[in-house]
Image (cartoon, rainbow, N blue to C red; front, side):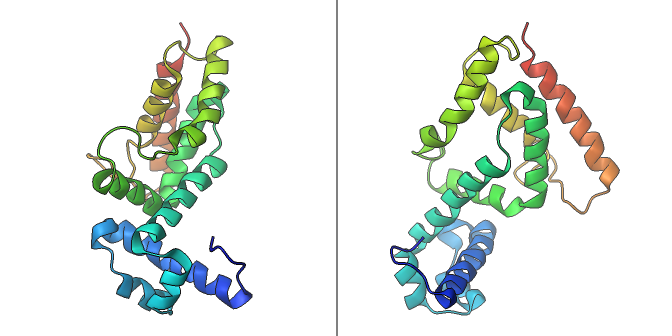
Length: 195
């Protein structure tokens, strides 16, 4: 959010910029995104964009960190049922494919190795604690909690917009999605089962 409170009109402009920039960054990446296209789509001007965000890079950061926070809140982890969590992630990728594309651009253009964001610990700690607790209770296989989480996330992305074999869309038949959900659920269940 901007440093100063927004008026109702300012809040609407701010949101239009975020919406237009999300589409732009998802389509073209950080380097390929153009401020001119963003402000045109948002029905505002460069001065307003820079007043709110400071730069194109900071605008991307605002969108990206909002995405990370929202997916954590919308698809909260249930370490006792990681299979269900994977299915809910699959559904969120169908609902918001642009957000997965943003993460892909961040990986390609900013951090090709290691954690995707420096703030990963703040976002991952509750998930990792939940997995560790489920491991201690004998409900999830032993091992590094981060590796278990990373594997489940990767499995949930098998048909996401960044899949190297097939990108699913919400427009496909419901039966197709149900078949994938069942396979994903069973595969994750087996992968994380405690021995």
